[in-house]
Amino acid sequence: MEQLNRKTVKVNSYTEKVIQFGEGNFLRAFIEWIIWKTNQKTDFNASVVVVQPIEKGLVDVLNSQDGLYHLNLQGIDNGKPVDSIELIDVVSRGINPYQNFEDYLKLAEQPEMRFIISNTTEAGIAFDPNCKFTDKPALSYPGKLVQLLYHRFEYFKGDLSKGFIILPCELIFLNGKHLKECILQYIELWQLGNEFKNWFEKACGVYCTLVDRIVPGYPKDTAAQLIERIGIEDKLLDKAEIFHLWVIEAPQEVAKEFPADKAGLHVLFVPSEAPYHERKVTLLNGPHTVLSPVGYLSGLNTVRECCEDDLIGKFVDKVMFTELLPTLNLPEDELLKFAKDVKDRFVNPYVKHFVTSIMLNSFPKFKTRDLPGLKTYLERKGELPKGIVLGLAGICTYYKGGKRGEDEIVVNDDPKIMDLLKNLWASNNCETVAKGVLAASDLIWGEDLNLIPGLTQMLTADLELIKNSGMRQAVKSVL
View (cartoon, rainbow, N blue to C red):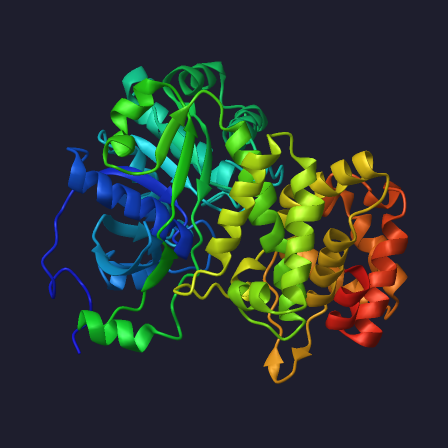
């Protein structure tokens, strides 16, 4: 069977206008698909250069296929089943700045470049004072971005028409605000001068956004059938649900330059993305983050299996409807409808969303997705939400590693967080683990969670119950 590339298939070529940090499944199933659709429906005519944000990634594979891959969308649309597969042709090339730093900087010299988009996980938008301007590249995403911006500023001699529209897609509330703060911190740390700072603030816009689409990623269980269906080898097959929503807090001038809302897509340019963000993060991502370790340690592998399981399904409902929903301030009927729609998306019969894919960087995810609800629930109810705390115990237990039956548990997170959990579990004492995790202020939480009344004791008890009796018994104890 032929390999997928631009010699074996005829595809369009577009003008490179977008620099994208991240080459993972989500961006390819969401941003690239939106740009592909916008190219079809408008005169946008844009292609994407993908920058690999960490040293090891998929850029080599992406380049071996000349940026091409297929996206399989499945779900129910207006009551009718959809199972489409499309060739996405908007990625022109990929760059690994750790190997080709000069090629990375040269992106800033292209006058048509206008947009910077990123999804480097919740841990990606962070200021690391150890980064140096002379690093090739800086380790952090904001550091790399400042290196690129400064090169553009110098190359075009401060031309205000050569700024960037920067759209972070990391699932952090006010992600644009946080990214801009990091950029300004690096400008100060690296002493890049007021002239550059003024250019950045006048010429560039960093906008808050919210993304929403469930992307299980590579469809390993149906890949053979899909490859037979398309008739060509594709190592980067991607899969997602039909539903999509991109909320961008930006003025209409940005919408005119990026006309995705004119392409029949659910892309909204709004004065504030806050209500959309809080609802989505709390009622979709919040349950995702805690059901994944609980379900996995109960012997389940997908979100759908978790929701349809007699026991774990009740746990998901408890977390979503009883613990997280009451912490939001929107009208209850609106929240209930959204939560029920989310449950329908969770049990989409066409999508196998493996819980292990959700558990990447679980601690930063819990901090942004579940911890605010835990605090609000405690404040309003006078007690801790047992399901959410059990979810945190599940994450701690998952990070212990080892085996689940015959399967090796493979943890993927910041090496410092993984080392912390390894060292804490070496004590073989659940109270030590609970106190140590909750005390990880600098590394994870930004505060000492041991100060939350009753949390240390409840987390310790959950860890001991999981250790001694198993996860399913622990779930029964909170229902």
